[in-house]
Length: 258
Ligand code: BT5
Image 1 (cartoon, rainbow, N blue to C red):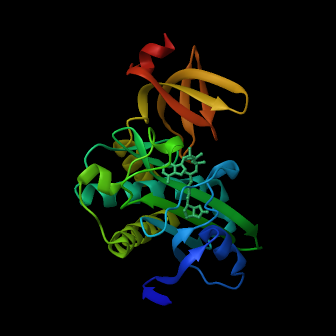
Image 2: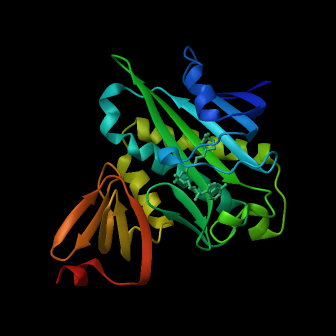
């Protein structure tokens, strides 16, 4: 079934392996094509991790963007803006305790409710093909044992159910607004909004795991391309990719430099 929600055209499926894979296979799809499935049998996270995709309970959505190829250094900001849009939609629907963990995880009271998988699939001469996949736990009342301590859902947090399409459409409106700002080069606005929504942005003691390396430091904001600045000892490291975990209490990055 195809639904139009300008600028988006949504292709709905009852079940797919992965909405990202389906959209990638639609080679001639125009910008703003979306793929949504009620359930996924092979939902993917980053680095070939799996995304638990219980049928009917969550939003499993992929969006195609065709940004100009000279914007490639700013591509990480599209993941950040997706997380911002998810966080805003949750807050608007009355969810308390919403946070964003760098770069794109949305948490509620410390548990993950949404994740983003951004994949740049090919570089043409003038535009890139970017598939932005978003998974959000909405009406789940429980999770498999391996996620029971770390995952949450809209229903668990609020005690209420939400119509998946209603959440999807509001989220898409917000993504369209933020993407338009991104396209116009308003990176600072996105970073500012992200930083206001995230307790990880500044003065947070964290351990960052990059492959086999572990860095302990204090967060000190994002660069203009969305990388995380980490103060470790006297150095400031720019983290492009890695797993961030909070360590106890917050201290100021200024003190961490001393
Ligand atoms: C992500 O990866 O968080 C990106 C998830 C993107 C899923 C969407 S659904 C639509 C589209 N189609 C796809 O195939 N994927 C996208 P990552 O940061 O690597 O986190 C994955 C980890 O989160 C797993 O290893 C689990 O620990 C945990 N996890 C898996 N499923 C979860 C869920 N439903 N809720 C909370 N945590 C989950």
